[in-house]
Image (spheres, rainbow, N blue to C red):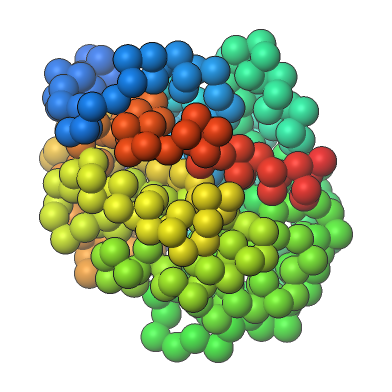
Amino acid sequence: MKNQDKIDLTRRDFIKRAAAGAIGGVISASLPGSLWAQEQQQDPKQPEKPYPKNFRKIHDDMIVLDGCCPLLTWGIDPMSGRVDKATIGKGPALYIEGGVTAAGASVGGTRTSLELTRTSLKLHNQMIEDNGWIKVKSTADILRAKREKIFGMWYLFQGAYAVEDNLDLLEEFKEAGVGQVAPGYNYRNRFASGQLDRSDAGLSMAGVDLIKKCNELGIIVDGVHNSDKDVFDMIEFSSSPVIISHSNAKAVYDHPRNVPDDLIKAIGQNGGVVGAVGWPTFVSESQFPTFDQFFAHIEHIIEVAGIDHASIGMDYFAMIQGLMEDDVAQKLYDQIIASGAWTAKEYGHPPYVYPTGLKTPATFYNITNGLLSRGYSVEDTQKVMGGNLMRVMKEVWG
């Protein structure tokens, strides 16, 4: 089968697959087999500032968490009900190489039907079982992952579309391992206004009920991809801390997917965290952002919200240059734009190149490097790399 045949989806099928985290299953066979080892060859440069010689040991001793990673779904196709065994382990392998303890897998999201979400959960469970990884449902599972040096994965929704009009379905999802839910995804749905929609009315009454049900069940409320007023409403109605798992600071780079200082401050005052994201079009105007440009967002979040309320949510995705051939990435991008899930204005265009020194999860340790080299203590570095998000998880999940 030719490359163009592999991703020649109908608009309807693309929306279904993208929403269910199925894009990895669509393109996995098109990937060059050697790309997983090319991170250092592609961009060997390290952050410009000197770092402690023992920074990797310090990193490896920490609990390190990534608040959102669509890359973990790579190779899962709920539409066909299949797992591509040649691809499925490669995303987690990069995280293991980068010294990450656990990360959030996007198992459901924009426009995902209940049926596809159930299939997605089943396939993710199969993937975890087949590879001997740990499905994270509590902080005890993260501690076990660290202790036993086994990769951990928790489930999240980027948009609560699968809940439909039945909040009791959240009980089923919680039991299946979903521990983090964003009510909307970019555009208005029955729960929220969405971060990119043309108007912002905040949460609907159904959205308020969703927040309360998440609180009742011990599910983290995630404001990512939701409007400013949506998130302020979440803070008002939630009895638990609200997080924004992967967004940058609008004061550093004025982009519609980034968040303003008053919201960053409110998240901190509420006890939550804001996770700096590496998605290149959210970092800077440049299509090839630098390490320092990414770090400016981390430091601004720390300055506004406090050291106890900054975290990391890199949002690594299969379309990263170096993980996917450029022509395949362009065709996939064209499908996403045609589906209406993204717009070119907000999401840019391929090649998608993550900040220098952070091209894939295999170099996640360079964030620790960057914090230490900028004078942050080991204790404060541990907070940003996982401790702060772990604190919220402990409060909500136990």
